[in-house]
Image (tube, rainbow, N blue to C red; front, side, top):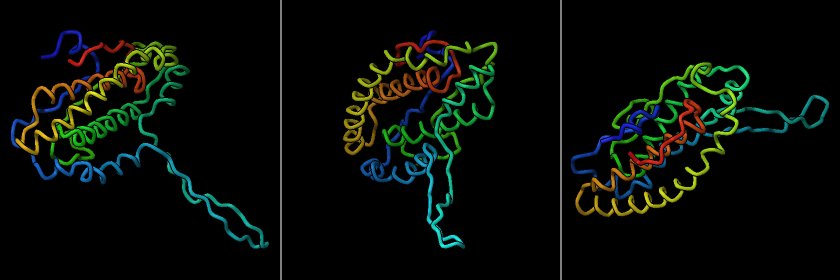
Amino acid sequence: METNASSAYPATLSIDYPDRELDRVTSAFRIFTVIPIMIVLGSLTGGSRSNGNTLSAHGTLKTTTYSVAVTAGILFFSTMLMIVFRQKYPRWWYDWNLQFTRFGTRVGSYLALLRDEYPSTDEEQAVHIYFPYPDARQDLNRWLPLVKWFLAFPHYIVLVCLFVAAAFCTIFAWFAILFTGRYPKGLFDFVVGVQRWALRVSAYAAILVTDKYPPFSLD
């Protein structure tokens, strides 16, 4: 059950607990089965540029750019500039950030053994994430995005420790699934809580949809 403070926070995450026997085979080899969808996710988080040398009509070498990929995961820097200088959060940037976060969380949840259905690129499945579209003029301080990354520093320290603990929980859950077919409920709630905490920090410091400081809470 979520507390009043956490439930009121404008970034929510819940993952349906698999109250059934999980697939032991795909769980045993999860580190390998996740590779294809990780490649897809990785292709959305960076840019690439390819150059080639061609011979010109005058016999000199000419460098030609053949392709440029311009995908960059969460749109942070451009969103920050728009809020600071225009007090505007473009709707399609918000839609991209929301859908990219949902997709990445589905992949992360699959890797952490929280679910055993293969992550969809577009369907919600059992991972539910939402944060509201902000009115940049009314809801956001135009200067705060310049320092949010710094103000969230205490959360970064705590999250490093929590992610280490969550990794150990996932290893323990891996053995539990192999022997019993079930993900221990207490471990499940903890790992989901860590992801929920990280989502709130991301919504505040990276996605920039809220000025409300994230609570130090797994709930």
